[in-house]
Length: 93
Image (cartoon, rainbow, N blue to C red):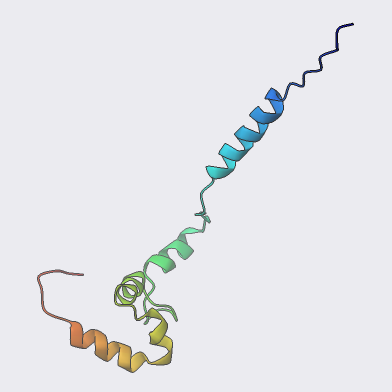
């Protein structure tokens, strides 16, 4: 008597799991929120004068110098440190 062979076909299950794994790795951690034109303009033109937030340019400079966290606790010291490090160059930034 010949033993009965049982073969399981896992191909569809493996294929489905592989596709799900690949697709989950393709998602991006960045998202976009649509806003109206007035909100977008306000975000782009924000400054310490027009809002209670720093401008994007100010945030970048503080990040570059590692002073972003120190600003809230010691704003005068941060401004003095930035001013001390300024050297005139032919660069608008």
